[in-house]
Length: 283
Length: 283
Image 1 (cartoon, each protein chain N blue to C red):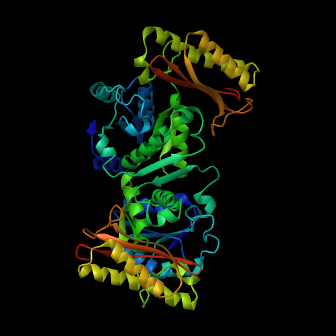
Image 2: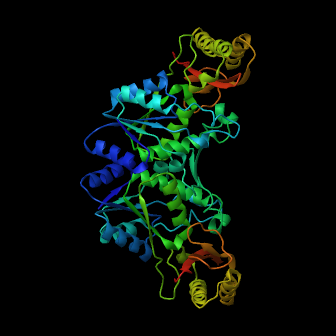
Image 3: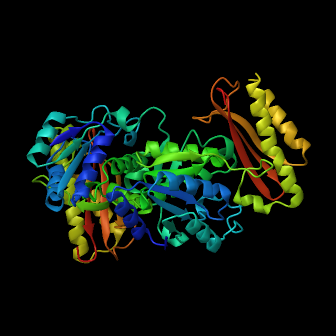
Protein backbone atom coordinates (compact mmCIF):
# COMPACT_ATOMS: atom_id res chain seq x y z
CA UNK A 1 0.00 0.00 0.00
CA UNK A 2 1.29 3.42 -0.94
CA UNK A 3 0.33 6.59 0.97
CA UNK A 4 0.47 9.76 -1.15
CA UNK A 5 0.02 13.44 -0.29
CA UNK A 6 0.48 14.90 -3.77
CA UNK A 7 -1.79 14.97 -6.80
CA UNK A 8 0.40 13.87 -9.70
CA UNK A 9 1.58 10.47 -8.38
CA UNK A 10 -2.09 9.58 -7.67
CA UNK A 11 -3.09 10.22 -11.26
CA UNK A 12 -0.10 8.27 -12.55
CA UNK A 13 -0.87 5.27 -10.34
CA UNK A 14 -4.49 5.14 -11.55
CA UNK A 15 -3.51 5.53 -15.20
CA UNK A 16 -0.84 2.86 -15.00
CA UNK A 17 -3.33 0.45 -13.48
CA UNK A 18 -5.91 1.24 -16.19
CA UNK A 19 -3.34 0.92 -18.97
CA UNK A 20 -2.65 -2.59 -17.75
CA UNK A 21 -6.35 -3.34 -18.14
CA UNK A 22 -7.19 -2.90 -14.46
CA UNK A 23 -10.47 -1.62 -12.99
CA UNK A 24 -9.82 1.15 -10.47
CA UNK A 25 -12.14 1.72 -7.50
CA UNK A 26 -12.25 4.89 -5.39
CA UNK A 27 -13.53 5.24 -1.82
CA UNK A 28 -13.57 8.92 -0.76
CA UNK A 29 -13.70 9.36 3.03
CA UNK A 30 -13.06 11.92 5.74
CA UNK A 31 -11.19 9.29 7.75
CA UNK A 32 -12.18 8.10 11.25
CA UNK A 33 -12.87 4.85 9.44
CA UNK A 34 -15.44 2.45 10.90
CA UNK A 35 -17.22 -0.69 9.77
CA UNK A 36 -19.32 1.16 7.16
CA UNK A 37 -16.21 2.53 5.45
CA UNK A 38 -14.73 -0.96 5.52
CA UNK A 39 -17.83 -2.27 3.73
CA UNK A 40 -17.19 0.32 0.98
CA UNK A 41 -13.55 -0.75 0.79
CA UNK A 42 -14.40 -4.46 0.78
CA UNK A 43 -16.99 -3.90 -1.97
CA UNK A 44 -14.39 -2.00 -3.98
CA UNK A 45 -11.85 -4.76 -3.33
CA UNK A 46 -14.27 -7.36 -4.74
CA UNK A 47 -15.16 -5.38 -7.88
CA UNK A 48 -11.85 -3.71 -8.74
CA UNK A 49 -8.25 -4.70 -9.35
CA UNK A 50 -6.90 -1.48 -7.79
CA UNK A 51 -8.46 0.26 -4.77
CA UNK A 52 -7.74 3.86 -3.81
CA UNK A 53 -9.03 5.43 -0.58
CA UNK A 54 -8.93 9.19 0.07
CA UNK A 55 -8.79 10.59 3.61
CA UNK A 56 -9.50 14.31 3.68
CA UNK A 57 -11.58 16.30 6.17
CA UNK A 58 -12.87 18.82 3.62
CA UNK A 59 -13.26 22.26 5.22
CA UNK A 60 -15.55 23.63 2.49
CA UNK A 61 -18.39 21.26 3.33
CA UNK A 62 -18.56 22.37 6.99
CA UNK A 63 -20.60 25.42 7.96
CA UNK A 64 -19.05 28.13 10.16
CA UNK A 65 -20.72 26.72 13.30
CA UNK A 66 -20.17 23.07 12.46
CA UNK A 67 -17.64 20.58 13.77
CA UNK A 68 -14.70 20.93 11.35
CA UNK A 69 -12.18 21.51 14.14
CA UNK A 70 -13.32 18.69 16.38
CA UNK A 71 -14.14 16.18 13.62
CA UNK A 72 -12.30 12.98 14.65
CA UNK A 73 -8.89 12.54 13.00
CA UNK A 74 -7.36 9.08 13.44
CA UNK A 75 -4.90 8.81 10.56
CA UNK A 76 -2.61 6.08 11.96
CA UNK A 77 -5.50 3.75 12.79
CA UNK A 78 -7.12 4.53 9.44
CA UNK A 79 -3.98 3.62 7.52
CA UNK A 80 -3.68 0.32 9.42
CA UNK A 81 -7.31 -0.48 8.60
CA UNK A 82 -6.72 0.30 4.92
CA UNK A 83 -3.61 -1.85 4.86
CA UNK A 84 -5.47 -4.73 6.49
CA UNK A 85 -8.34 -4.36 4.00
CA UNK A 86 -5.99 -4.68 1.03
CA UNK A 87 -6.14 -1.06 -0.16
CA UNK A 88 -3.54 -0.21 -2.84
CA UNK A 89 -3.32 3.57 -2.46
CA UNK A 90 -4.34 6.08 0.22
CA UNK A 91 -4.42 9.77 -0.71
CA UNK A 92 -4.04 12.03 2.35
CA UNK A 93 -3.70 15.57 0.97
CA UNK A 94 -3.30 18.71 3.04
CA UNK A 95 -5.87 21.52 2.83
CA UNK A 96 -3.24 23.54 0.92
CA UNK A 97 -2.84 20.77 -1.65
CA UNK A 98 -6.58 20.62 -2.25
CA UNK A 99 -7.20 24.39 -2.08
CA UNK A 100 -4.09 26.31 -3.10
CA UNK A 101 -4.20 30.08 -2.66
CA UNK A 102 -6.29 31.66 -5.42
CA UNK A 103 -8.82 28.83 -5.78
CA UNK A 104 -12.08 30.33 -7.07
CA UNK A 105 -14.17 27.50 -8.51
CA UNK A 106 -17.38 26.14 -7.04
CA UNK A 107 -19.75 23.43 -8.30
CA UNK A 108 -23.41 23.85 -7.47
CA UNK A 109 -26.04 21.19 -8.06
CA UNK A 110 -29.57 22.58 -7.86
CA UNK A 111 -32.78 20.54 -7.40
CA UNK A 112 -31.58 17.53 -5.43
CA UNK A 113 -29.68 19.79 -2.98
CA UNK A 114 -32.65 21.94 -2.05
CA UNK A 115 -34.49 19.81 0.50
CA UNK A 116 -33.43 17.52 3.37
CA UNK A 117 -29.94 18.36 4.68
CA UNK A 118 -29.45 20.92 1.90
CA UNK A 119 -32.08 23.15 3.48
CA UNK A 120 -30.30 23.00 6.86
CA UNK A 121 -26.68 23.17 5.79
CA UNK A 122 -26.31 26.02 3.26
CA UNK A 123 -23.29 25.49 1.00
CA UNK A 124 -22.66 21.98 2.32
CA UNK A 125 -23.38 20.17 -0.95
CA UNK A 126 -21.43 22.75 -2.97
CA UNK A 127 -18.44 21.80 -0.84
CA UNK A 128 -19.14 18.10 -1.33
CA UNK A 129 -19.71 18.32 -5.10
CA UNK A 130 -16.60 20.45 -5.64
CA UNK A 131 -14.23 18.30 -3.59
CA UNK A 132 -15.53 15.06 -5.11
CA UNK A 133 -15.16 16.47 -8.66
CA UNK A 134 -11.55 17.31 -7.75
CA UNK A 135 -10.96 13.81 -6.35
CA UNK A 136 -12.42 12.28 -9.53
CA UNK A 137 -9.86 14.27 -11.55
CA UNK A 138 -6.99 13.39 -9.22
CA UNK A 139 -7.93 9.69 -9.08
CA UNK A 140 -9.90 9.08 -12.30
CA UNK A 141 -11.39 5.79 -11.14
CA UNK A 142 -13.76 3.54 -13.04
CA UNK A 143 -16.02 3.08 -10.01
CA UNK A 144 -16.53 5.18 -6.87
CA UNK A 145 -18.25 3.83 -3.76
CA UNK A 146 -20.54 5.90 -1.50
CA UNK A 147 -22.60 4.87 1.51
CA UNK A 148 -26.38 5.20 1.45
CA UNK A 149 -26.35 6.53 5.01
CA UNK A 150 -25.57 9.85 3.30
CA UNK A 151 -28.26 9.22 0.72
CA UNK A 152 -28.67 12.81 -0.45
CA UNK A 153 -24.90 13.12 -0.82
CA UNK A 154 -24.83 10.03 -3.05
CA UNK A 155 -27.67 11.41 -5.20
CA UNK A 156 -25.97 14.83 -5.49
CA UNK A 157 -22.67 13.24 -6.54
CA UNK A 158 -24.39 10.94 -9.02
CA UNK A 159 -26.26 13.92 -10.49
CA UNK A 160 -23.04 15.96 -10.71
CA UNK A 161 -21.12 13.11 -12.35
CA UNK A 162 -23.84 12.61 -14.96
CA UNK A 163 -24.25 16.32 -15.65
CA UNK A 164 -20.52 16.95 -16.09
CA UNK A 165 -19.97 13.75 -18.14
CA UNK A 166 -17.57 12.41 -15.51
CA UNK A 167 -16.88 8.82 -16.61
CA UNK A 168 -16.61 7.42 -13.05
CA UNK A 169 -19.62 5.24 -12.16
CA UNK A 170 -21.17 5.93 -8.75
CA UNK A 171 -21.86 2.75 -6.75
CA UNK A 172 -24.17 3.16 -3.71
CA UNK A 173 -23.53 0.76 -0.80
CA UNK A 174 -25.98 -0.12 1.99
CA UNK A 175 -25.93 1.57 5.39
CA UNK A 176 -24.12 -0.40 8.09
CA UNK A 177 -25.80 -0.40 11.51
CA UNK A 178 -24.91 -1.08 15.13
CA UNK A 179 -26.65 -4.01 16.87
CA UNK A 180 -29.51 -1.73 18.01
CA UNK A 181 -29.98 -0.29 14.51
CA UNK A 182 -28.11 3.03 14.84
CA UNK A 183 -26.51 3.91 11.50
CA UNK A 184 -22.74 3.93 11.83
CA UNK A 185 -21.18 7.40 11.71
CA UNK A 186 -17.93 8.92 12.83
CA UNK A 187 -20.03 11.48 14.69
CA UNK A 188 -21.64 8.82 16.92
CA UNK A 189 -18.46 9.16 19.01
CA UNK A 190 -19.80 12.52 20.26
CA UNK A 191 -22.78 10.85 22.02
CA UNK A 192 -22.99 10.24 25.79
CA UNK A 193 -24.19 6.80 26.97
CA UNK A 194 -27.67 8.21 27.56
CA UNK A 195 -27.82 9.94 24.15
CA UNK A 196 -26.45 6.83 22.47
CA UNK A 197 -29.37 4.83 23.84
CA UNK A 198 -31.84 7.48 22.75
CA UNK A 199 -30.33 7.55 19.23
CA UNK A 200 -31.59 4.03 18.55
CA UNK A 201 -35.09 5.51 18.22
CA UNK A 202 -34.19 6.94 14.78
CA UNK A 203 -33.74 3.64 12.99
CA UNK A 204 -36.49 2.01 15.06
CA UNK A 205 -38.92 4.68 13.83
CA UNK A 206 -37.71 4.35 10.22
CA UNK A 207 -38.08 0.55 10.22
CA UNK A 208 -41.57 0.85 11.73
CA UNK A 209 -42.48 3.35 9.01
CA UNK A 210 -41.29 1.01 6.28
CA UNK A 211 -43.35 -1.76 7.83
CA UNK A 212 -46.46 0.44 7.93
CA UNK A 213 -46.00 1.16 4.21
CA UNK A 214 -45.67 -2.56 3.52
CA UNK A 215 -48.99 -3.09 5.27
CA UNK A 216 -50.81 -0.43 3.26
CA UNK A 217 -50.21 3.00 4.80
CA UNK A 218 -49.39 5.41 1.92
CA UNK A 219 -50.16 8.78 3.50
CA UNK A 220 -46.80 10.53 3.90
CA UNK A 221 -48.04 12.95 6.58
CA UNK A 222 -49.35 10.10 8.73
CA UNK A 223 -46.14 8.11 8.31
CA UNK A 224 -43.81 11.00 9.15
CA UNK A 225 -46.09 11.94 12.07
CA UNK A 226 -45.65 8.46 13.51
CA UNK A 227 -41.88 8.69 13.07
CA UNK A 228 -41.72 12.00 14.92
CA UNK A 229 -43.86 10.60 17.72
CA UNK A 230 -41.65 7.55 18.20
CA UNK A 231 -38.44 9.64 18.26
CA UNK A 232 -39.86 12.22 20.69
CA UNK A 233 -41.07 9.40 22.95
CA UNK A 234 -37.43 8.33 23.43
CA UNK A 235 -36.38 11.63 24.98
CA UNK A 236 -35.83 15.33 24.32
CA UNK A 237 -34.48 15.91 20.81
CA UNK A 238 -34.54 18.55 18.11
CA UNK A 239 -35.97 17.06 14.91
CA UNK A 240 -34.71 18.99 11.87
CA UNK A 241 -36.74 17.12 9.30
CA UNK A 242 -38.55 13.88 8.59
CA UNK A 243 -39.39 13.64 4.89
CA UNK A 244 -40.50 11.02 2.42
CA UNK A 245 -38.96 11.79 -0.96
CA UNK A 246 -38.83 10.43 -4.49
CA UNK A 247 -35.76 8.17 -4.46
CA UNK A 248 -34.29 9.75 -7.61
CA UNK A 249 -35.29 13.42 -7.56
CA UNK A 250 -35.52 13.81 -3.74
CA UNK A 251 -38.78 15.72 -4.20
CA UNK A 252 -41.11 15.39 -1.22
CA UNK A 253 -44.05 13.07 -1.93
CA UNK A 254 -47.47 13.22 -0.31
CA UNK A 255 -48.34 9.63 -1.08
CA UNK A 256 -46.04 6.60 -1.26
CA UNK A 257 -46.99 5.58 -4.80
CA UNK A 258 -43.45 4.98 -6.09
CA UNK A 259 -39.99 4.01 -4.76
CA UNK A 260 -39.22 6.48 -1.97
CA UNK A 261 -36.62 7.22 0.61
CA UNK A 262 -37.67 8.09 4.15
CA UNK A 263 -35.05 10.53 5.44
CA UNK A 264 -34.52 12.31 8.72
CA UNK A 265 -32.09 14.51 10.61
CA UNK A 266 -32.23 14.84 14.39
CA UNK A 267 -30.09 16.66 16.92
CA UNK A 268 -29.37 14.69 20.05
CA UNK A 269 -27.12 16.49 22.50
CA UNK A 270 -24.02 17.75 20.65
CA UNK A 271 -24.70 15.53 17.71
CA UNK A 272 -26.55 15.92 14.42
CA UNK A 273 -27.60 12.44 13.27
CA UNK A 274 -29.04 11.51 9.90
CA UNK A 275 -30.57 8.27 8.70
CA UNK A 276 -32.81 6.96 5.93
CA UNK A 277 -34.40 3.81 4.56
CA UNK A 278 -35.80 2.77 1.19
CA UNK A 279 -39.53 2.07 1.05
CA UNK A 280 -42.41 1.75 -1.39
CA UNK A 281 -42.65 -0.35 -4.56
CA UNK A 282 -42.18 -3.63 -2.75
CA UNK A 283 -39.29 -2.58 -0.48
CA UNK B 1 -11.72 12.55 -40.14
CA UNK B 2 -14.58 11.21 -38.07
CA UNK B 3 -17.65 13.29 -37.17
CA UNK B 4 -19.37 12.20 -33.95
CA UNK B 5 -22.57 13.32 -32.25
CA UNK B 6 -22.41 11.05 -29.19
CA UNK B 7 -20.28 11.16 -26.05
CA UNK B 8 -18.95 7.63 -25.63
CA UNK B 9 -17.20 7.19 -29.00
CA UNK B 10 -15.41 10.53 -28.41
CA UNK B 11 -13.97 9.35 -25.13
CA UNK B 12 -12.94 6.03 -26.65
CA UNK B 13 -11.16 7.71 -29.57
CA UNK B 14 -9.17 9.96 -27.22
CA UNK B 15 -8.24 7.11 -24.88
CA UNK B 16 -7.16 4.86 -27.73
CA UNK B 17 -4.93 7.58 -29.07
CA UNK B 18 -3.41 8.19 -25.62
CA UNK B 19 -2.91 4.48 -24.99
CA UNK B 20 -0.83 4.37 -28.15
CA UNK B 21 1.35 7.12 -26.68
CA UNK B 22 -0.31 9.95 -28.61
CA UNK B 23 -0.78 13.55 -27.47
CA UNK B 24 -4.39 14.66 -27.90
CA UNK B 25 -5.27 18.29 -28.64
CA UNK B 26 -8.74 19.81 -28.24
CA UNK B 27 -10.10 22.93 -29.95
CA UNK B 28 -13.55 23.82 -28.56
CA UNK B 29 -15.52 26.14 -30.87
CA UNK B 30 -19.04 27.34 -31.55
CA UNK B 31 -18.47 26.76 -35.29
CA UNK B 32 -18.67 29.50 -37.95
CA UNK B 33 -14.96 28.81 -38.28
CA UNK B 34 -12.67 31.58 -39.52
CA UNK B 35 -8.93 32.16 -39.77
CA UNK B 36 -8.51 32.51 -35.97
CA UNK B 37 -10.05 29.07 -35.38
CA UNK B 38 -7.78 27.69 -38.07
CA UNK B 39 -4.79 29.09 -36.21
CA UNK B 40 -5.93 27.16 -33.10
CA UNK B 41 -6.34 24.01 -35.19
CA UNK B 42 -2.99 24.44 -36.93
CA UNK B 43 -1.28 25.02 -33.57
CA UNK B 44 -2.92 21.87 -32.20
CA UNK B 45 -1.92 19.98 -35.36
CA UNK B 46 1.74 20.97 -34.81
CA UNK B 47 1.83 20.03 -31.12
CA UNK B 48 -0.42 16.96 -31.01
CA UNK B 49 -0.69 13.61 -32.73
CA UNK B 50 -4.51 13.62 -32.56
CA UNK B 51 -6.66 16.75 -32.96
CA UNK B 52 -10.30 16.98 -31.89
CA UNK B 53 -12.52 19.98 -32.66
CA UNK B 54 -15.89 20.53 -31.02
CA UNK B 55 -18.63 22.54 -32.72
CA UNK B 56 -21.44 23.42 -30.33
CA UNK B 57 -23.36 26.67 -30.00
CA UNK B 58 -23.81 26.46 -26.24
CA UNK B 59 -27.17 27.93 -25.19
CA UNK B 60 -26.23 28.32 -21.51
CA UNK B 61 -23.59 30.98 -22.23
CA UNK B 62 -26.03 33.26 -24.03
CA UNK B 63 -28.18 35.71 -22.08
CA UNK B 64 -31.95 35.89 -22.72
CA UNK B 65 -31.54 38.96 -24.99
CA UNK B 66 -28.39 37.78 -26.71
CA UNK B 67 -27.89 36.28 -30.17
CA UNK B 68 -28.21 32.52 -29.59
CA UNK B 69 -30.86 32.10 -32.29
CA UNK B 70 -29.12 34.13 -34.94
CA UNK B 71 -25.55 33.04 -34.12
CA UNK B 72 -24.08 31.90 -37.47
CA UNK B 73 -24.28 28.14 -38.08
CA UNK B 74 -22.23 26.89 -41.03
CA UNK B 75 -21.68 23.21 -40.28
CA UNK B 76 -20.93 21.95 -43.78
CA UNK B 77 -18.31 24.64 -44.45
CA UNK B 78 -16.85 24.09 -40.96
CA UNK B 79 -16.46 20.36 -41.55
CA UNK B 80 -14.70 20.98 -44.88
CA UNK B 81 -12.34 23.42 -43.18
CA UNK B 82 -11.58 20.88 -40.43
CA UNK B 83 -10.97 18.15 -42.99
CA UNK B 84 -8.62 20.40 -44.95
CA UNK B 85 -6.75 21.35 -41.77
CA UNK B 86 -6.10 17.70 -40.92
CA UNK B 87 -8.46 17.39 -37.95
CA UNK B 88 -8.97 13.80 -36.73
CA UNK B 89 -12.31 14.10 -34.92
CA UNK B 90 -15.15 16.64 -34.91
CA UNK B 91 -17.72 16.44 -32.12
CA UNK B 92 -21.05 18.05 -33.10
CA UNK B 93 -23.45 17.23 -30.26
CA UNK B 94 -27.09 18.30 -30.09
CA UNK B 95 -28.31 20.48 -27.20
CA UNK B 96 -30.13 17.38 -25.88
CA UNK B 97 -26.89 15.37 -25.85
CA UNK B 98 -25.09 18.08 -23.88
CA UNK B 99 -28.00 18.95 -21.57
CA UNK B 100 -30.31 15.96 -21.12
CA UNK B 101 -33.52 16.54 -19.21
CA UNK B 102 -32.82 16.78 -15.48
CA UNK B 103 -29.39 18.46 -15.74
CA UNK B 104 -28.83 20.49 -12.56
CA UNK B 105 -25.10 21.17 -12.26
CA UNK B 106 -23.42 24.54 -12.68
CA UNK B 107 -19.78 25.55 -12.31
CA UNK B 108 -19.09 29.05 -11.05
CA UNK B 109 -15.67 30.67 -11.01
CA UNK B 110 -15.57 33.77 -8.81
CA UNK B 111 -12.89 36.50 -8.89
CA UNK B 112 -11.75 36.45 -12.52
CA UNK B 113 -15.38 36.46 -13.75
CA UNK B 114 -16.43 39.57 -11.86
CA UNK B 115 -15.11 42.39 -14.04
CA UNK B 116 -14.90 43.00 -17.80
CA UNK B 117 -17.48 40.96 -19.77
CA UNK B 118 -18.52 39.15 -16.57
CA UNK B 119 -20.05 42.36 -15.25
CA UNK B 120 -22.08 42.83 -18.45
CA UNK B 121 -23.11 39.27 -19.19
CA UNK B 122 -24.47 37.71 -15.97
CA UNK B 123 -24.18 33.92 -16.03
CA UNK B 124 -22.14 33.91 -19.24
CA UNK B 125 -18.96 32.51 -17.69
CA UNK B 126 -20.92 29.93 -15.66
CA UNK B 127 -22.21 28.65 -19.00
CA UNK B 128 -18.69 28.69 -20.47
CA UNK B 129 -17.02 27.00 -17.47
CA UNK B 130 -19.69 24.30 -17.24
CA UNK B 131 -19.73 23.39 -20.93
CA UNK B 132 -15.93 23.36 -21.16
CA UNK B 133 -15.66 21.12 -18.07
CA UNK B 134 -18.11 18.76 -19.79
CA UNK B 135 -16.09 18.83 -23.02
CA UNK B 136 -12.90 18.08 -21.06
CA UNK B 137 -14.59 14.98 -19.64
CA UNK B 138 -15.99 13.91 -23.01
CA UNK B 139 -12.68 14.50 -24.81
CA UNK B 140 -10.03 14.23 -22.06
CA UNK B 141 -7.28 15.86 -24.10
CA UNK B 142 -3.71 16.57 -23.04
CA UNK B 143 -3.82 20.12 -24.42
CA UNK B 144 -6.72 22.49 -25.17
CA UNK B 145 -6.33 25.57 -27.35
CA UNK B 146 -8.13 28.87 -26.72
CA UNK B 147 -7.82 32.22 -28.52
CA UNK B 148 -6.65 35.29 -26.61
CA UNK B 149 -9.31 37.39 -28.34
CA UNK B 150 -11.57 36.02 -25.59
CA UNK B 151 -8.90 36.69 -22.99
CA UNK B 152 -11.18 36.61 -19.94
CA UNK B 153 -12.69 33.33 -21.14
CA UNK B 154 -9.22 31.80 -21.41
CA UNK B 155 -8.34 32.97 -17.88
CA UNK B 156 -11.64 31.64 -16.47
CA UNK B 157 -11.13 28.24 -18.10
CA UNK B 158 -7.50 28.06 -16.94
CA UNK B 159 -8.60 28.95 -13.39
CA UNK B 160 -11.37 26.34 -13.48
CA UNK B 161 -9.05 23.65 -14.82
CA UNK B 162 -6.48 24.32 -12.11
CA UNK B 163 -9.06 24.53 -9.31
CA UNK B 164 -10.78 21.27 -10.30
CA UNK B 165 -7.49 19.41 -10.94
CA UNK B 166 -8.44 18.87 -14.58
CA UNK B 167 -5.30 17.44 -16.19
CA UNK B 168 -5.81 19.15 -19.57
CA UNK B 169 -3.28 21.97 -20.11
CA UNK B 170 -4.76 25.25 -21.42
CA UNK B 171 -2.77 26.72 -24.32
CA UNK B 172 -3.56 30.37 -25.17
CA UNK B 173 -3.12 31.36 -28.85
CA UNK B 174 -2.71 34.90 -30.21
CA UNK B 175 -5.59 36.93 -31.63
CA UNK B 176 -5.84 36.85 -35.43
CA UNK B 177 -6.70 40.19 -37.06
CA UNK B 178 -8.05 41.48 -40.35
CA UNK B 179 -5.77 43.69 -42.46
CA UNK B 180 -7.07 46.84 -40.70
CA UNK B 181 -6.53 45.33 -37.24
CA UNK B 182 -10.09 44.21 -36.38
CA UNK B 183 -9.95 41.06 -34.26
CA UNK B 184 -11.54 38.17 -36.13
CA UNK B 185 -14.89 37.08 -34.74
CA UNK B 186 -17.86 35.16 -36.08
CA UNK B 187 -19.95 38.13 -34.98
CA UNK B 188 -18.16 40.53 -37.35
CA UNK B 189 -20.56 39.14 -39.98
CA UNK B 190 -23.34 41.20 -38.34
CA UNK B 191 -21.62 44.52 -39.21
CA UNK B 192 -22.69 46.80 -42.09
CA UNK B 193 -19.95 48.21 -44.35
CA UNK B 194 -20.02 51.49 -42.45
CA UNK B 195 -19.90 49.79 -39.03
CA UNK B 196 -17.15 47.48 -40.23
CA UNK B 197 -15.02 50.54 -41.06
CA UNK B 198 -15.78 52.10 -37.69
CA UNK B 199 -14.86 48.86 -35.87
CA UNK B 200 -11.22 49.25 -36.86
CA UNK B 201 -10.98 52.02 -34.26
CA UNK B 202 -10.97 49.43 -31.45
CA UNK B 203 -7.65 47.80 -32.29
CA UNK B 204 -6.20 51.13 -33.47
CA UNK B 205 -6.92 52.60 -30.03
CA UNK B 206 -5.53 49.52 -28.24
CA UNK B 207 -2.29 49.55 -30.25
CA UNK B 208 -1.89 53.29 -29.61
CA UNK B 209 -2.41 52.64 -25.88
CA UNK B 210 0.25 49.96 -25.86
CA UNK B 211 2.61 52.35 -27.62
CA UNK B 212 1.92 55.09 -25.07
CA UNK B 213 2.81 52.64 -22.28
CA UNK B 214 6.04 51.72 -24.07
CA UNK B 215 6.95 55.41 -24.13
CA UNK B 216 6.32 55.92 -20.43
CA UNK B 217 2.63 56.55 -19.78
CA UNK B 218 1.64 54.40 -16.76
CA UNK B 219 -1.54 56.16 -15.60
CA UNK B 220 -4.41 53.75 -16.35
CA UNK B 221 -7.10 56.47 -16.27
CA UNK B 222 -5.23 58.57 -18.81
CA UNK B 223 -4.61 55.56 -21.07
CA UNK B 224 -8.21 54.35 -21.02
CA UNK B 225 -9.40 57.95 -21.51
CA UNK B 226 -7.35 58.18 -24.70
CA UNK B 227 -8.76 54.85 -25.91
CA UNK B 228 -12.33 56.01 -25.35
CA UNK B 229 -11.61 59.28 -27.15
CA UNK B 230 -10.19 57.53 -30.20
CA UNK B 231 -13.09 55.08 -30.45
CA UNK B 232 -15.73 57.80 -30.04
CA UNK B 233 -13.98 59.90 -32.71
CA UNK B 234 -14.67 57.12 -35.22
CA UNK B 235 -18.46 57.40 -34.86
CA UNK B 236 -21.39 56.82 -32.52
CA UNK B 237 -20.85 53.74 -30.36
CA UNK B 238 -21.79 52.41 -26.95
CA UNK B 239 -18.62 51.65 -24.96
CA UNK B 240 -19.35 49.02 -22.29
CA UNK B 241 -15.93 49.07 -20.70
CA UNK B 242 -12.29 49.93 -21.29
CA UNK B 243 -10.15 48.49 -18.48
CA UNK B 244 -6.51 47.79 -17.78
CA UNK B 245 -6.25 44.65 -15.69
CA UNK B 246 -3.64 42.43 -14.06
CA UNK B 247 -2.97 39.79 -16.72
CA UNK B 248 -3.42 36.88 -14.26
CA UNK B 249 -6.07 37.99 -11.77
CA UNK B 250 -7.97 40.38 -14.09
CA UNK B 251 -8.10 42.92 -11.25
CA UNK B 252 -8.27 46.51 -12.50
CA UNK B 253 -4.96 48.34 -12.04
CA UNK B 254 -4.52 52.08 -11.61
CA UNK B 255 -0.92 52.11 -12.73
CA UNK B 256 0.77 49.92 -15.35
CA UNK B 257 3.52 48.59 -13.05
CA UNK B 258 3.24 44.92 -14.06
CA UNK B 259 2.15 42.79 -17.05
CA UNK B 260 -1.37 43.93 -17.90
CA UNK B 261 -4.08 43.32 -20.42
CA UNK B 262 -5.94 46.28 -21.90
CA UNK B 263 -9.48 45.04 -22.55
CA UNK B 264 -12.58 46.61 -24.03
CA UNK B 265 -16.11 45.84 -25.14
CA UNK B 266 -17.98 48.14 -27.52
CA UNK B 267 -21.37 47.95 -29.17
CA UNK B 268 -21.41 49.03 -32.79
CA UNK B 269 -24.81 48.74 -34.43
CA UNK B 270 -26.20 45.24 -33.78
CA UNK B 271 -22.82 43.93 -32.72
CA UNK B 272 -21.01 43.61 -29.40
CA UNK B 273 -17.27 43.56 -30.14
CA UNK B 274 -14.48 42.75 -27.70
CA UNK B 275 -10.74 43.08 -28.06
CA UNK B 276 -7.61 43.22 -25.91
CA UNK B 277 -3.85 43.54 -26.06
CA UNK B 278 -1.01 42.68 -23.72
CA UNK B 279 1.03 45.59 -22.40
CA UNK B 280 3.44 46.55 -19.63
CA UNK B 281 6.63 44.78 -18.53
CA UNK B 282 8.37 45.21 -21.86
CA UNK B 283 5.44 44.23 -24.09
